[in-house]
Image (cartoon, rainbow over all chains, first blue to last red; front, side):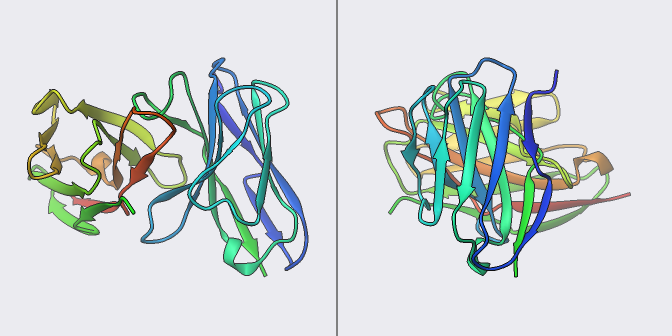
Length: 114
Length: 113
């Protein structure tokens, strides 16, 4: 089983450029999430989705947009990248709302903004 | 706002020794406490979790304890092995509406052979 797959795994952007990170899960999970991981700060939730066609803001949503057009896919977009968005991004999915159930993470996408 | 404090940030132990990681949460409504292990270049993976109606849970060499009164919970790894070397995250969340899981900052565990 592939589980949660993220593409690309690495990307370097210049300030002001745009890009999209793609997350795909094959577990038929309803809930999907985008986190960023920065040294000494753990995992912080950017946006999440409780089902196809729905999205909601997390803890640090500014500068990001998301879309969930298909149940298995969750896209994270950066319209105008800034150096502060240099981070490792993790997508996750869960069968139940993550408050009370396991999160399944992808392997991460390392983004550098110059 | 709510937060989860995790200590220590780095922990080095000799193979075979025990390792303990401690977390404190601020949201008294939290009722679910998972622990995730992140190996180098990988995403976090759930290793054990505990709910607020349980004080202790054990799975082979790993155990988690919860003190709701003090809002503390801890991860205990016994008989550590080199493959236990990783970053460990604690988290706290509640199921009373919305989505709110707060992660600790992580503990990097080194197990020396």
